[in-house]
Image (cartoon, rainbow, N blue to C red; front, side):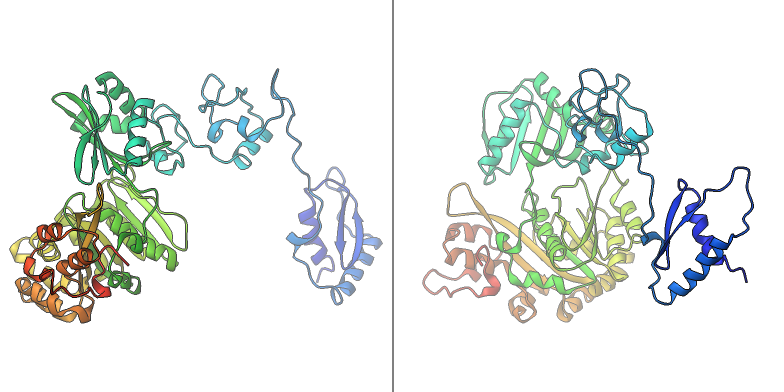
Length: 527
């Protein structure tokens, strides 16, 4: 066997290094001569043999050190030039082109200090590895996209977002300060903001030209094409001053119109929302279907985000969300969360769900169960061991279950009933009620938990008996809407008139004199 076998592997690694190279072997230090030009002989010298023998002896008394961890001298790249052009100082991160891309004029797409493009290897190395990506402050259609990136995708990863014009931003900021939920901007009319469910004018009329200019700043080229083709477009952005917004931009008889939903900056907790404590038991489930339902504008997305955040804080799982558009953005916690937007990252809800099943998800979040194909994919995912959380625009829990079944043709409904009976874990239905305090609303909840009696009602087509099951279903964690309203009423959060106006069965609220204190299961808006 070749006595130089161990030494040869080390020499092969050291050949590319500058000669001479000092290698510590077996506790000794050796100077290896540089290879002779023209491929000299590799015959070992006496010194080589002595070193080999010493290395073998040292191997028994010195622990073996991985080659990558040894103290090998390496060549560092040359220092960057301290002058990048006339009148410029040392190059810093803030002076580098945004994302390493410059336009043809040689200036960065972000309005930073002017810098001449540097095409050297050392400059490119510094740009890609040392400088963190900087968020663009211009619309995505006016900034050059990175190579291979889909158009318009960069806005979802932008930490600061894009700004409207100053006049529109001022309206949005004032609306958020006043706890408004929506802002309506119409050409040549005064803006209107929705506070506690009621629209009221705010400020002076906004001209058609000013509104068009503000819209142009936030639309990417594909979104502008969608607006021109369909007459409307939905998107989510983060305005630098007004925060996270869900926008609907459309054309109407008077010109352009913008409806901006003021989205929460972060997911709220169940305590902040006043969710019944039974809902938090969702964290114990690892598969099945959970539906958050309610009328349009009742806060279903906010409740769904609170449930997702429970998993994000408590469990290390993979969560995939499919939304249209992405609204609430989740902070980094224990879970891995992948948020996908319909129209930007995927063609449709159903297409995204087909792909999601191959992405190793634990939880799949669906922004809206709006068609039969999406419901079928959601039930299939729930059957195959995933937890599916979705929203649905239905006024009550019973109607939510009925709508899920009625989306399918009659010849398929028996199979869907059997599937739904095994998959349904929780239905949270909610309504926003005018609070006793002015300009404020609170949520009242109805909770239907998955259990054997409920599944029997679904299979046997007896959903009309669900109110009776809710009345005796407290042992299963069920909460009637009237129980939630009673809790809010007795805590003086809402008035009796508001409770009576929203109850499905006002008789269940009882009289003011014989009302009993609410249980903690029906705590409503208080905890």
